[in-house]
Amino acid sequence: MPIANTFVDAEKFAHTAGLRAWPYQGRPLAGVVNHHVVAMDLMAKFFKTLKNVRPDIETFVILSPDHLARGKDVSTSRLSYNTPTGESTVDGRWSKDLYEYGAYDGTEGRMFENEHGVGALAPFIKREFPEAKIVPVFLGKNVSRQRLESLGRALASFADEKTFVVVSSDMSHYLRREDAAARDRETTQWLARGDWPLLESATDKNTDSASAFAVLREYLNLQKGVGRFELLGHAISTDYIRDPLNTTSYIVGLWD
Image (tube, rainbow, N blue to C red; front, side, top):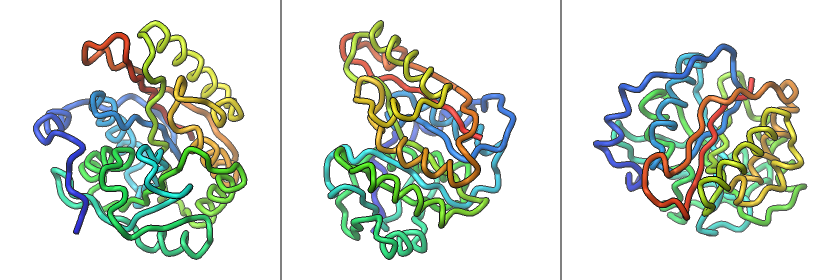
């Protein structure tokens, strides 16, 4: 049975259909986007922008935090996702290859049905890329660098020209707005400079997906070398809701 849509409000999701994509030129191989649906507009515009420049994508590899610590260290699932626009299915071939490669502790159960790092993105992927499949990857908090680099190499070996890798990440957490903004400026500088060691060792004060950046760096190096990062959007949760002492922030962009 597919994972139920408990991640996005269907009416609010429908309202994002009319948003415009950001201007972007290039052929991106990977991107970073938030999973906190308070900033649903950023998610919608990210996938609309991607649709404009990469309509050929057939497989989305989503690198997500294992927020609820349901897996061991690196996990995946073969369960599809129900969304307001239909069922978003998982590419079982990738799952099989990754199990055999040994980079994964796989699960076929419902351990990740409440994990919004993938579930919140699935509706936007299904709307803009209705035929594409997803490969969910859940990263625990204490995965070794060797394990992450091994995963990056595995993904690079399975990828083709119609693959796209998504880092599912919210940025600063639980800071005052001015402190969140300062941390986001710092994180944006790391992304622009390609300062991977700082990204890969970051805490929740900068990003909740430090492990994903370690995987992505290895993946991009094996594809064509780490490319240019372009910032598309930024916001803080206080742009949407009132809670100035308990913020989450978002940085959205692409690598080509």
